[in-house]
Amino acid sequence: MHFHIDTALIKMFLFIAFVFLQNAGFLAGQTTCRFADLFTIDDLVSNRQDAIHRFKMHMCLWEGKFGYDVGYNHEIGITYDGHKIDYTTGDLHENLQYWTAASKEALHINVLSLYLMDNVYARQFFRNASQDDIVDILERKIASYNEFHRRYPGFGGFLPWFAANGSAMNLLNGWETKVPGLDNGQLIWSIKILIETLKSKKLTSLVDKYQQRIELMTQTSIPVFYEAERGGIRCESGILDMFNESQITDPRNYVTMGRCLLDDPYEGELMAYFMDLYAPWTLYGYTMEERNRIWTYKRDRLVRDEYNTSTQSTTVTQKQVTVQRGFWFSSHEQWKYFYLPYRDIDLQNRLFTNGEKVRVYHSAQNRIPGLYASVASDAKPGTYQVDYWSACGIQQIAFQSIEHESVVTPYASFPVIMANESIGLAWYLNMIQGPAMQNMYGSTEATNINGEAISPVITWDSKITTVVAMLSSHLIDVTRAILQRDRTYDRFYNITEYEWSKVFGSKPLLGEDLPWSLPSTKIPRPIDGLPDFTQCRNTLTTTSSIPISTVSASLSVLNKSCHVVVIIFLLSFLIFLLK
Image (cartoon, rainbow, N blue to C red; front, side, top):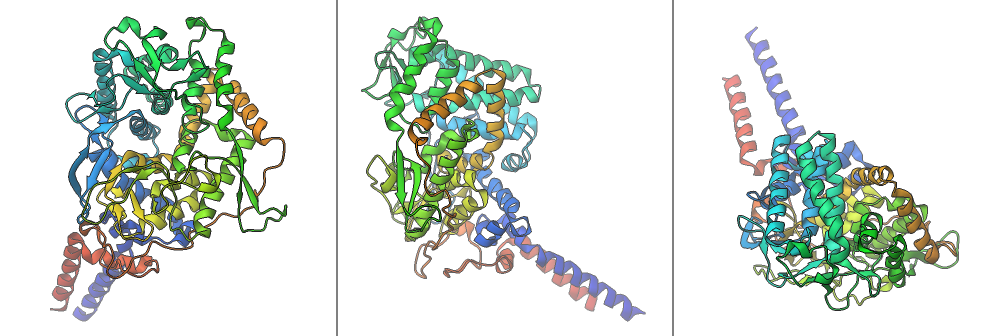
């Protein structure tokens, strides 16, 4: 009888051990930042065992360690641009990038809004924080905005680049008397979306505070940003009198910096749509027809282009794909698709899809292991001097010269994710599987395509854009409802359809049958090459170019002290049973 009891206990032990080892991959993914080693491209493309959901949960957990921890000033609720990270450990380096701008604030507000929508991934990002914690961040943020406006009313409620590393928002060298249009277009739509999510939670006091900010920005948008001489929106507006609040509605208080107006059909267009649909034109002596000049001024930048491929189309003899020409064709230019329902217009949706197919085709065909976007440069191992490389993209379909093709960045996958989630996530995975491309706070900024150097930086632009892109359909649904409620949806739709049809509607789009491309090569991992961060290293991360299987990665559980304790306990229990 005693023998049978021991046998039963041993069987129970073996069952517990089996369950533990079967779930080791999941446990490892939750406790090691190199969760990319738990997945393969085929897992995501095939959505094997709900891989897309599991991958997104891992991703939001680790990106949240930046966005909910070190990426903002907790005292004032305001973002930092980012941090340098230690080239060896992957933890924070001494250099805090203490400055920030409206674009980073927009991304922060986006993920806070998604939390208030009860989105499971946003809740993972904030580690299932209480609603009171989220409300506290938003209260601190709007209080900081209001205090900054009290001290510097000349900005008209808009945000310059500014310093965020003290107990208040402060002026930043070089931005004391000017404010950008593009970044504030991103912020203003983000605040409008936030207000609706606050209403859904019946957070009336916060609704009122953010609504007052929108009303201020609406009231001052024309004097601050509209240049009547040429009929366009200023890239940067110079402020003559910063401290007299009575001057913020006087157009004479603002001047165009240089000659730059926002004439792009990219993310700068967010401010154009806001001012067209909501600015008080008649209050400043204009007729409503004045706003049409914005679109006339912008027309020259909307250009049809054909990307030449080596793939034979099934419908035409030309091996070409029609796209909208990019400035650099950097992924960053697609930011506008986070907020406005452009893709409700069939022509827009087809062009967007064509562009993202070309983006991945170009990299796959040229054996580039990632995608291009404006980003911080790489730095030699052990060094921290980086430059911002704007001119990253695809030369064949760009207005400007491409200067940098040696660095790819995970966030460049964000518009691909919006067009085809599994394909976009596969490219994202391919990049974060590179050496030192996952750190204590999620993805690393960028990597050299030879795998020999990284950009030792973590920023809102290079990290949280991807999270927002994955969840952007929820933001767009809110914006669509706002436009329909305010009876501005039809004008948005008609402008978009008219302007794009003028350029793309006269002849068929080419290459819509181009298939989606997956990565054709991986970031090299030579034996004597760049290692993973010491605080983010799986024991079975190898120098092999073959993706590590989930089963193998499961054994990396042995690299974690908490898992070792469990194994020791199980072995001790077995020895006890055998006595």
